[in-house]
View 1 (spheres, rainbow, N blue to C red):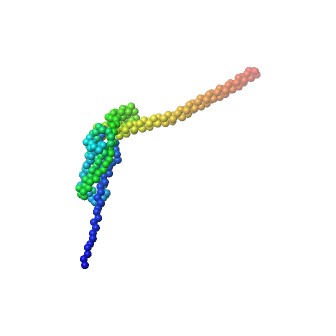
View 2: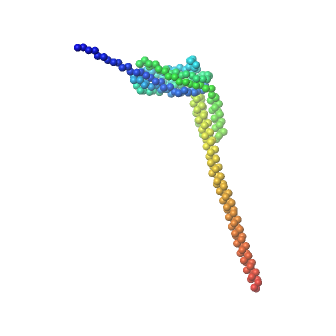
View 3: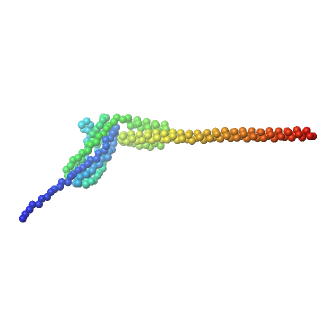
Length: 243
């Protein structure tokens, strides 16, 4: 007796997730770094993963914004494995508006292509060198803020390296810290004035009390002296009368 055995083949799902950053804003002639994560949420090991990227504005590829990665190729990603890389954007454009960033991932084995998208808004903004100069002058005019000069130096270094967004953040950090120090200094002076005011009043009251006590003591002494003098005169008169 012969029979036939049946077999079933279960397909293992293959999946790769590209976890993109939230939408970001930047300025013209800026340079920004954004985190990127690859996640194998399937059941099969992925081998030889390559990343590439493109940027478009209004559906047309933009060559004035460059995209690169700190690491663009990975040997493998096992089930549940996550890897991180950094996406670099060099914004050489003079255009404002929203740009669409697309990151593509190609897997050699098993064959798989995936992509992720995010949006970048490029703003005009004030010139970073003018902003840093303004903050420097503001700090010089307020001596309590001189300790913040180091933050401004960091902002200058970032600006010189084309990292304008970070330079803006550092400049804002310095100006906000300076304003806080000025407010704290003003509150300290106000508290000191309030503390000195009662002491001043107490001194005035004490002075007045001492003054009146002195007057009272002087009056008492004078009255006492007058009484003694009167008694002395009466005794003298009596003595002369009987002599």
